[in-house]
Image (tube, rainbow, N blue to C red; front, side, top):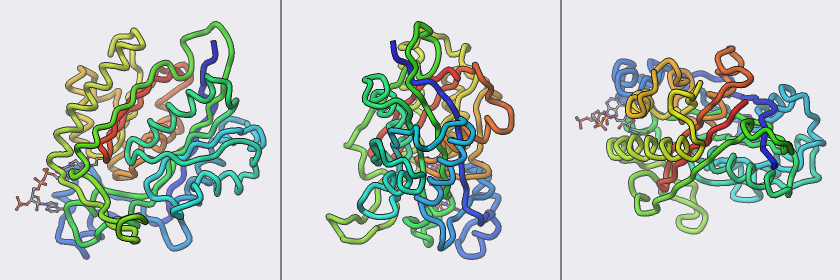
Length: 321
Ligand code: COA
């Protein structure tokens, strides 16, 4: 039996931090409103010399260092992003070139805020099928570039960043390590609740993010608790067996409501939305790396990842470190 086992993680953030108070100088909002409705206190915003690929490269290098694996040993890069450097080629190929590991596969996946879950499940499948041995799974975004900075309903919610995991195919009898179970979903009927109003084939512009926040919120809690239950059932565990939930960091209230529905104590939920805001596909690996580096998540822990995003798309994945 082949398992995709965890080897290391890394993350990268832009240099510039923007607080709620700073934002309220240019947008009709307040620190009080943002903290109360979302839990967000600040976000990192990419400067001119920072792009999705530079952040992804930083996170990938940190993950390789953490894993003690040389870039030449990587034969698969799956990069989740909705804000690629260019329409093509895939940002993953830029990362591949920068790392100097041109021997294997490299491609992007696009599932917006669920992108990391889609990327992890894709990499896991390729490792299990024997098509690759060692993968970098990256989530990287520069959402600041697709925000309408005059729309207070959306621009206060997002930030930029990247996170990466190294996973490796391991053959053996031990079934209880690495990626244990994953589930992915999509519902294209919900397009109009969260989308970007531009693109190469429609407007030939990049466009801006548009969202009906209240409706997204409602769907998020329902979809996330349902996919979490599916993965718990697939894995044959009880919710209480989970050491840590690493959720997509969209809104502290969504995290609380989802944990409550599953009866998970709030102390088991990793929250970084206060510092990073919503970094879309980067948010899960960024939160995971933050919690590993601060000593909360440890080797042997059972970790549940979950996310929902535009499409809608959503998914969850259970991994034993
Ligand atoms: N500052 C101050 N007021 C704001 C504001 C801001 N940044 N954004 C919106 N408001 C106002 C609205 O105009 C509205 O005013 P009105 O009642 O006079 O019309 C009021 O606040 C309430 O707006 P509403 O959208 O109903 O607030 P909410 O409690 O639903 O919170 C979100 C808004 C966006 C924070 C919340 O719906 C949310 O987080 N949704 C999920 C978003 C998400 O997760 N997206 C990503 C998924 S990947």
